Length: 301
Image (tube, rainbow, N blue to C red; front, side, top):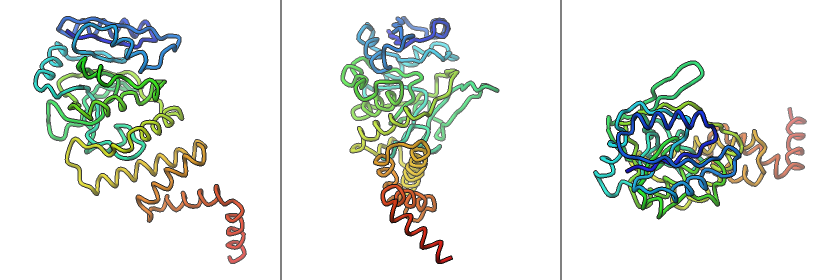
């Protein structure tokens, strides 16, 4: 009934998640592990390989650092898919807004985020819920990859883009964005999952944000709910400005910084931090003129 595909790098975590899902899923299932302790596969390649080996009509892709806290969650998944043939993808975390900006789902503002998760932190485990409309099932445009399920035909039509995303970042937003072009993408609040780890927002992650934004730029922004234009603009500007700051701090190529700095300036020319971007651009691209202007200002003081 449900094929569970796991890209596994840790045997202990793998055994724990299999034990957890076996006790809770409540329907016939198969587990398809893709052994990846040596990093042979990127997650897109691993998931495509696992799906190609599966036999059931519902595919579930899951990280191994999770535990299930809901009994018979497999029955709930089958029931949701039976509600509407246009439902193509189900997760437990996502966003109903994806801006034309270099953003992950958590960047998009609390008014758009939909999630129910037990997140384990070093000091505590905390249940996080964002469900402003008190729904059992919420339409979104992107979902997080810690756990999600789709119909087999959806995977066959879409598959994971291993060419663009060869590592372990943004495969989930890319896949859900592709699915959203033809199907409903949803977050369910009926299934509670505990997640052990937190994301690593390093430069590889930032490079994949840029790849995602470049790939889908002509389709963005995407909306699964009503969100006022003013809020969309504010979120888009905030995301672009903050991302540009991180690019400068991490010494990305000047051409990349220029692209997002100019976008930030055009979105809100009056913002003070954008004035700093303009100074940076002036210094980076016209250094001799920049030094001359600074010398003149010092003389005039």
